[in-house]
Image (tube, rainbow, N blue to C red; front, side, top):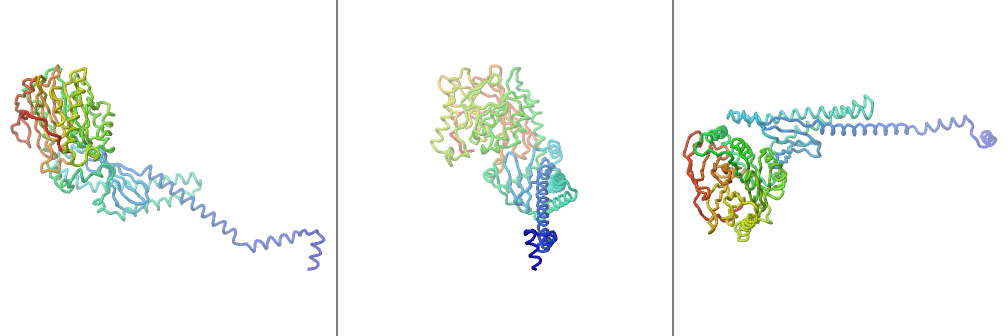
Length: 549
């Protein structure tokens, strides 16, 4: 020890090389765990990186490739999968809204979006009534097959996207393979969990979104309507066949042939979201050579944003479409109609179309908004005065018009009273029942005819609630070159599933007086002929403001 101490002192306290090597060896012996800990941290970081890349690849692959199109009966539907915190299914039904179902567990969300009816498959169903039953039975198989294809496609896209992302991130074959295998396990496990926990009974307890929040108010007793609709579907072929016979009936009528220069106006009202109404309108516009379509309101049921897409069919008609707002239409609905390239929205204003000067005003109420139309308000004197005041406002506008007004439009016929003697013809809707009458005459002024249209949409879904479904009705009006009403055809198609089509033609004997000559047409009524009622309703006072419809 003394020698080593002396050596250290003689070298000025510096360590010899041998001593340094000894100390480093001792240091390595005393700290054997440090390199191992560093290695574990690196492995953990690599595992987390692979997991992050895998999750990103699965999400990207699912969003890009996790959707398929499939046929569900006559519908063209899109099925799509998305990552989610909890498993559920959304059934989108434009423009009504969506159903949310607690259908399964796991981190996957299934969306089923029903598209438009396929014309070819729909015609095939119509031609073969038995195929309707087969289509309803095969719908479950269609959905199952579509979901299976969706799962396989999603799995393949998720794994492929993960492999590509891992190859770019790691540039290592082994790590890329690990990421792809992990993606296969995660995606396959999620889909397997969803399939294993599927709850078919969830369809009985849906959560509504959009317009379907009001589903109970719209359809009433859903089970009863569903049962009735099964019966109606059995008569679908007869109904469609009779629609085609309607045009044969029209061509066979020799009593009235519109002269050259005749303006044909189609009056529709109270569609109430029934897409069948649009199909009938398009057919009548083509078959009757319609020049102008007039809509006296209630094109929707609740005036909500999801319903706005329903009015897109206006543009397909490619004819001037003059519209006033009904009590079920909101300002948002009127704005959506105004966006259509061929639409004209009147609100206490006038327009001249095809030589016809038309004045119109929207209904002052908005029924779904209980601030403007509280329950039972239709029976109060305040609301009655409000409805009548609407007619007075329009009468003032007509009196100030630089051109004589040929047609006035109101939604509720109770608004028509102040228009007597102001213009020759007033068109209205609201009551869901067709009626033609004379307004009380004003001394020194010409008479005014009030024509109330029924429901072109069969009063929508609520039309199924009664013992007999509400018929779809519309009227074709013929105006001569002087823009006087010469004749009109009342078209009635039996309510949903009813094999009945009627055409009643009325020829005006004296246009100045508005009298009609009874004319007999041959309707189709379930394949048998029956006489057609003709003539007009008796003259009388306009109806009081009617209950909310």
